[in-house]
Amino acid sequence: MTTTTRLATGVVVAHLAVNLIHGAAHSGAQVPITALQNAFVWIVILIGPLVALWLIRTNRRYGAELLALTMGGALVFGLVNHFVIDSADHVSQVTNETWRLPFQVSAALLLLLEAAGVGIAGMAIAAKQPRRRQTV
Image 1 (cartoon, rainbow, N blue to C red):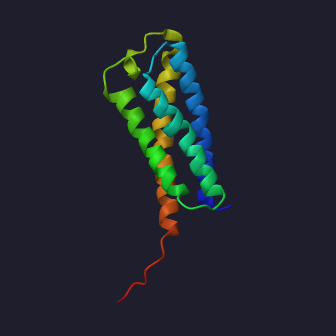
Image 2: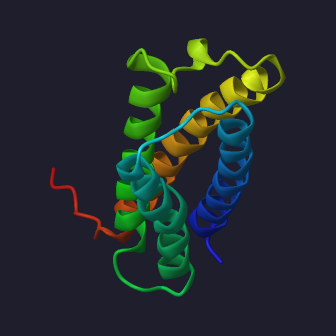
Image 3: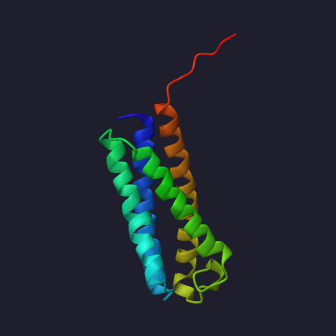
């Protein structure tokens, strides 16, 4: 197993774990999401990286590209919904004191993991490219 595969495995597993915590914080703090947002969360944020990891670990085509797309999409989604748009989903708007900190910390951790996932996917994509010979 390559270093990139190990890194991808670690980031995807950690991403899933933090997403489970963040989902519990959403429920506990009673922060609703729309049906469209829920579909995006299930397809792109939860299932997408797992499929990408399976593709990477089984040496199939487009695993790294799918990891880059799903982690990039999750990164933009989380950044916009948790830190940009002023809504009930914004980290500053969570009113439930018990769930505020878990919600905020998990939202921030997700951004870091998603950025790492994009970076790792970029490394994997670059590693697949043939090296060009330098001419003097």
